Length: 365
Image (cartoon, rainbow, N blue to C red; front, side):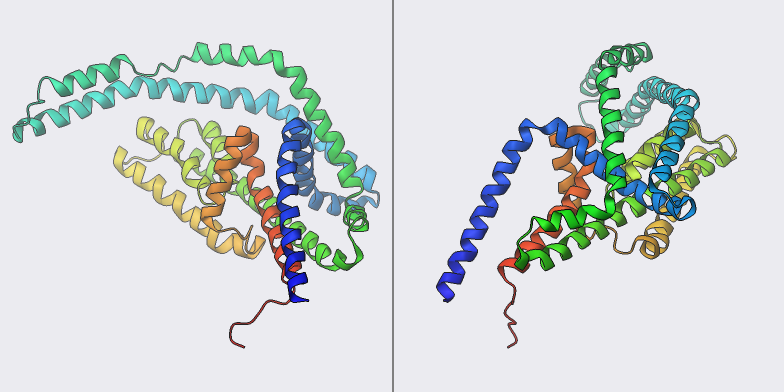
């Protein structure tokens, strides 16, 4: 009996691996469709809490969804007309200033290194380092704002595809929101009766994890970014909208996101300083660094645990690996959907372990 049970478990494991491999092969053929469905599912999780609030007030789910879509249309329209052009303009100005300051920093580095090299009698005083400096200066990346505008213009050819995908996501999301309370039951109908209880627990765990991610990680990231925007405006940091837009995206990504999102703020303060803070440049950098980390610590250690619990429950190494794999497979979209998918896989592995080993052996017995 034990041998039969072991062989059955091995067979299930092998079939599971084969299913995963076939799924990846099939996913390669339908990557665009799968991407749209995944984005729609994640958008559904993001909008579902707002739907529940409106549904209690309006008492009609369809009208509540329509009201959400109208609100999204207004926000997107205002963003395209008022915010996006200013963000692009600030990014272009920041890149132009960075380009102009790189030669200045190289000159400072050469002036600092040359006396040091002379003191230690190293033979690079007037030759090797100068040659190195000239090579870097000659091959310096030219961030041409006009080239940036041309690239944006060239993207006009893909506008129709983008709009089509956007409306498809809206349509999928509409029906997911409309039937969200029935989806779990429909899925369980296709699961064998003996596995429905455990599979249902897995679905509950996945729903809980994705709710924590979208209703917690994203909402907190947006709130935190808004606070940072106000802080940047009060301190007089240059390019506040562009810096906050970059930070808001990376704040969604745990562990590695906040440091990456802070880099442009650090660069901006280093180059242009802060208009409303009368300290020297080094003190200004130190102030913005301390303030950012204090707010980040409050968000991660005080607000987030009470608001979203344990967030997504993945080890930081797994988070980093998931982000790298997502970026490799699908670029920016892959980064956005990598962590929710990693959470789903994590819960599915727990389900498989519970199915294969329903009665784990206690080593203390």
